[in-house]
Structure formats: C-alpha cells, structure tokens
Length: 176
Image 1 (cartoon, one colour):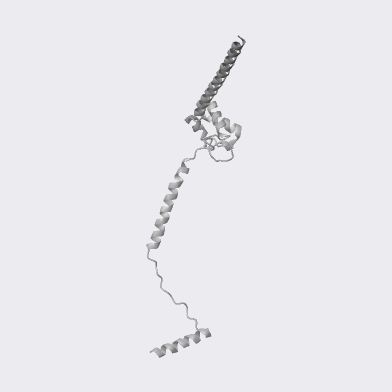
Image 2 (cartoon, helix red, strand yellow):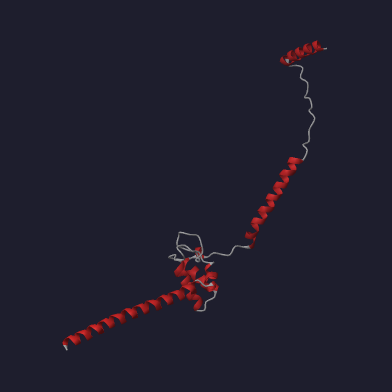
C-alpha cells in the first residue's frame, strides 16, 4: 500500500512538472507572439513616415530612426520607433510627435525634407557640363585669327646691332 502511494505521488509530481513546463512554454510562446505583433507595428508605414524626420542619435550612423544598423536593433532607433508608435496610438499628430522628440532631444534630432531646389542641382550641373562641352568644341573647331607680323621701330644708334646688320648686308651681296 505504501509503495502504491509512493508510486502515485511520483506520478503526480511528474505530471505537475510536465504541466509546469507546458505552461511555461505556453507563456513564452504568447510573449513572443505579442512581441512580434508590436515589432510589426513599430515597422509600420506611419511610424516610418514620422521616423524619416527624426535623426538617429546612436553616433554610429547618420540615418533617420528607420536605419537598418544591426538589423534594426539599434540601441536608439528601436526604442524611438516604439515611442513614436505609442505617441501615434495615443492620438498625437505627426507634427506633435516630432515636437515631442525635439523637446526631448533638442533641435539636432529634426531632419527636414530636402527642398525642391535641392532636387534641381543634378539637372543644373548636367546643363552646365553640356554648355562647357559645346564651348570647348567650338573653340577647338573655330579658325584661329592670324595677325600679320609688324616690324618694330628701326634702331640705328645701337653699335652692336649695326655691326650685325653690316655683316648681313655683305653676306647677301655675295648671293647675287
């Protein structure tokens, strides 16, 4: 009888351990599912839209808080995206969320959209390069203007020059 009770007690303890392990695994599975759900929420388009105006403050990159440093596990970006999501969930507009971050971290966190003139720079540089190429090609093809050589004033009072001039005259007389 005693052996039977001992066996029954062991069986109950084994079942309770099994139940404990089963419950623990169930809790971990539910926690993982909850974390996965919030991970997809902080990666939503709404969070990314606001995140594109907020600079990463980790010091290792110069991206916005949507950076992919360390597979999106940046020590600054992930909590910042979570905060953006929570602020949006509480009903704040994009401007209010950005203002909250600027108040919390200072003006250096704000990243403004590039203005429209910034988008025109490549086209302007391309046009300037085209004008420069046309100018250089025209300069290379244009006939150069030749000027006639003009003799300078005759200097008769230089004795060295007069000596050479006399020598040239004598040599040219021999040629005739």
